[in-house]
Length: 96
Image (tube, rainbow, N blue to C red; front, side, top):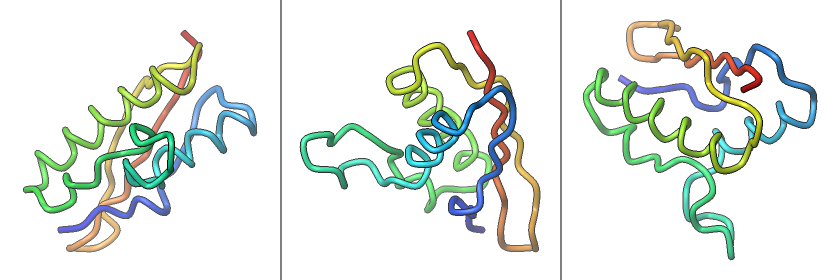
């Protein structure tokens, strides 16, 4: 099973700037940006069983939103199946 991070749906009360920032957080592996090694998601969850993968994705995302998107919070994260091997995250963000 794999997770389609590149096509994560982002919904809710986000302006273009916040959308881009959240998208950047989701698509950046933690440790890839010099001098900002804690920015992004720790992609080690992609090799985990499906339920653990989902839980770690949500946990990582909540942590990063708290750090890098002040005034915003994750309201809901759901997953849909694109096919028998791929899930697509859907993130709803709201104002605090």
